[in-house]
Length: 442
Image 1 (cartoon, one colour):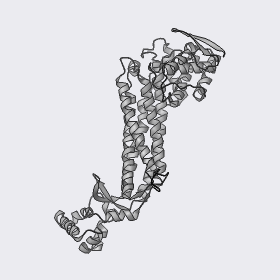
Image 2 (cartoon, rainbow, N blue to C red):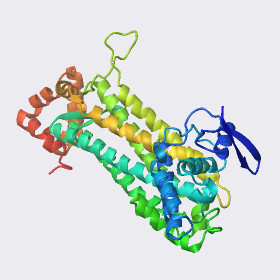
Image 3 (cartoon, one colour):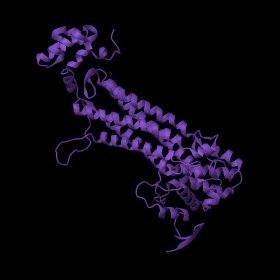
Image 4 (cartoon, one colour):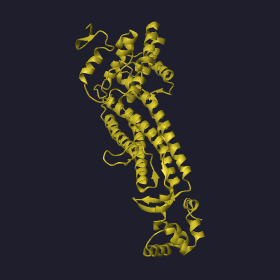
């Protein structure tokens, strides 16, 4: 096998001649033989955009030869699509240096350029990595907002479909006063509407970048002309409304903006868990029918389980756990650096990807939910709690007496009992969907 020798300040290393990366990546692959996640593809794509912006700035200012710069820029455009990107663990040490060097070396190999002297010119891991993570996260939350828009639309359709179907409300898992099934689904839709809005707005927390700050935000080893130009080039490359941080030292040292975004993702996870659990309960009560998507048991013929809802709940639990990881990583940053940025990035982008999948999966599944209207009415008119709707007209004591009479009567159909006691027209008007959902009585 043909080999080549590469050198760093630790010494020499033999690599296969056709290896598309260099000594720094090779050492990282040896050091971090960790199973599980490799560097997220969103981060790699964003890193290519960062390197392209840096090359454009260095080209315009004359720090890179025009022909060489053009090759680097072309390589940056295609680097993330390369089939030879290795499995580099997301849990690497060094605040992301291994990822930065892998990007430098692969792009350098593609462009025939030096990974440090040319690809990494006027840069550091500490300004390129957080910047790439912000770009990757912005793309992710935009997709997530669209996914929640689809989810919101699905539940709004069901809200309209069952706007006039009275059902029994439940509080503390016990029968309560009536509402409509449509209003129940409206509450789901509204929760997802908030998630849609929050994920859309949280992009604002990610638009300020520290690119040009190099190692600790002071811009040491980068010319001032480059520092002022490179973020402009990054805006052109990404099409995003990015701006340079006013305090680059602070922006390099602190990662709380990612914690804030994760908090919004955590809220979305909470809503997904809550709604999915509620749908499971409504299915168990027989008021709704979930679409059957696969056999539910290896031993019980005909059993069908709410597997989509259970998957969504598990995704929510994972995202909530990631939220804790992200907060801990940011809190453990020391002085001028957040050295646990690789785990933070992995958890944040993982949460975004998981929530996109969950929202789209639930939207598709919920679109096929059906209501068992007969079962809804059966449960509604078997519960004496609907007597509560008559309190404004009859008073608490009279309604309590009716409750006792119904219990002594042997239960049965509460509507029929009330029609005998109060008259059909009174009962029909009081238990109409319009009256039940009128927000107060007249």
